[in-house]
Image (tube, rainbow, N blue to C red; front, side, top):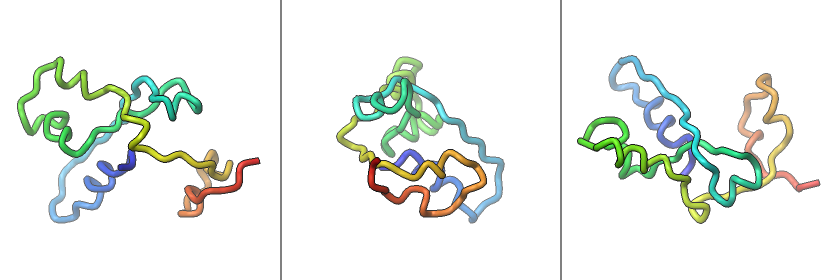
Amino acid sequence: MTACRLFNLVGRNTARIELLETAAQPTEPNELCAALHNRMPAILAPEAWPGWLGEQPADEAHVKALLAPYPSDGMICWPVSPRIGNVRHHDPTLIEPITAA
């Protein structure tokens, strides 16, 4: 699963028009992300979405537990071009793997 999967699903819904808001909620990094940064975005498995979005009842403790770091074994990491750090660049090649220097 990718961090953007939820946002892609929401953003591609053209069957209805409504105000949609998104936010990135940081959490502690998992083992994979800790090598890159001191935090990571919270990534929710699809089965957690209804509780997080308020579509199903969930108490505060359950919702807070969803902010645990996503398991490293469910993620893949590879080096990408430094072009990704410049907002002027917006093309699919930004996420293509490169040879690490």
